[in-house]
Image (tube, rainbow, N blue to C red; front, top):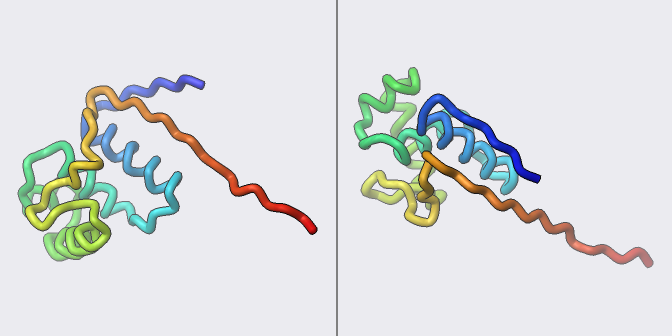
Length: 105
């Protein structure tokens, strides 16, 4: 199945990308944490600008950064984990969901 969707900018595409990862992987990520990931992956990091951009406070951003660092999504240098880097101009996702086989006795 092939689905195409256009977003207004890279930030929106990145937000959707992280929302899909959250849904498929059952990750415990809140809306603000997804916004922080999307911002860090598409813009130059600045805590105050980030807080303003996502209509939040610097304290909330700090809390999100701490959690995302503990989870391994971002580095201590406030960069996105290289394993998560994609080109948000052109994202191709291949999702493979596997179900465990169960036997009934």
